[in-house]
Amino acid sequence: MSDCLFCGIAEKRIPTKVLREDASTLAFPDIAPVAPLHALVIPKRHLAAWRDVDDPQLAAALFAACAAVARDAGYDEGGYRIVANTGADAGQSVRHLHLHVLGGRRFAWPPG
Ligand code: 5GP
Ligand code: ZN
Image (cartoon, rainbow, N blue to C red; front, side):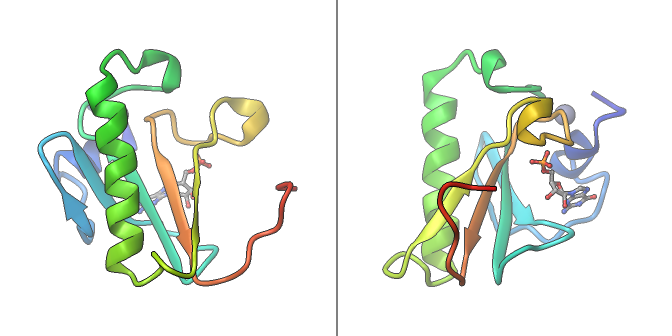
């Protein structure tokens, strides 16, 4: 989708530091980090939300990419959080599916 911010990043029309990339996913730093590690992991093809995920292998690839980003950043042992805000009530602000990978500090539970 030409007017989608994260499609622009996935297609490299918008320059971004790439943390990890494979055939179906891309990981890059969040522009407004809320933790020492704050990466976003997206499918390269446009999917607006989880209801649109039609391929279990893509879901597995997204979570594997999250784990790899956390491991690469050194948070595998200490712990990290994977978050997917989905829909308005959860605070989703970009309508291209994405997972936040957060690490490097303690996180409250339940989330606020
Ligand atoms: P959401 O609020 O939808 O769960 O997460 C969207 C995330 O995208 C936010 O954490 C926000 O900081 C991040 N973001 C918004 N615009 C950009 C951008 O242009 N580049 C990057 N790298 N992150 C962005
Ligand atoms: Zn998109």
